[in-house]
Image 1 (tube, helix red, strand yellow):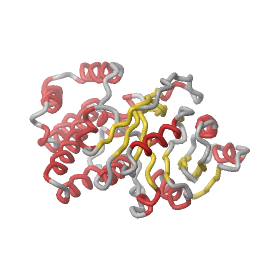
Image 2 (tube, rainbow, N blue to C red):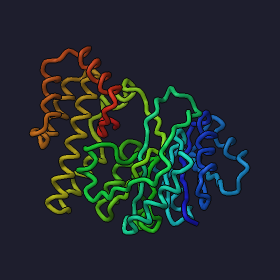
Image 3 (cartoon, rainbow, N blue to C red):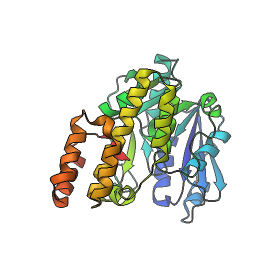
Length: 319
């Protein structure tokens, strides 16, 4: 079997039927689907049970979080490659066939992915079709993921497939009990051993929350374990790898400073900004410093709202 598609499910009943449909209508047919119900209470698991396709398996567990659900799916997977798909995202029919193309282009890569589009959480459970070119996707081989991450969109949780043998050697792949940055932590751990083959064709729709929700969720946070792990592992990398990783960590900390500003927590924003001192040579750090020192909150909100809707991708802001 070529692919195992792992879908963690927790109270996403309005979306799971569409998500499953996007998998079952793939052009490439050699796959299985493992839906890991993480203690849902909204009837989503029953929708999966009613799916009349032998390739779909439902695994049940008490609520333990998205990381535990993905790890359970990896352990039960039978495919050569494991794909991760969130229960409210969906795939273009050409997604799996394009991953096969990327694997053929760069067989040395244990990680393959496709481009994704962002869809607002208010878009409704069933997506509007989007067109892609029929030509084969250009495939980029990424050897410095930490540095490439800041140059434009790279990976989302639902756009990645990893060789199962590599994942089994890294279990538990996702940090148990964590639900923020646990996926980024795995991608960067993988990138320490393997390049990433990224197919440049938008084949995954990734549902995003509004900016206010991001601010309210992260603005008061003081500690992000995955950033600390990245910082600690950087000491084991080459000089170039260490520079790239610490720069990436600093960029995430700048994003957290901005989210704290939007939450009205200037003191916390200053603390995040000071932690990001390695990025002082960049315009982003200085612009955030100016916001923290001089800009009223209502103007900060306007500036961040404009950036959110200006079509300029900013990966760390997706935290």
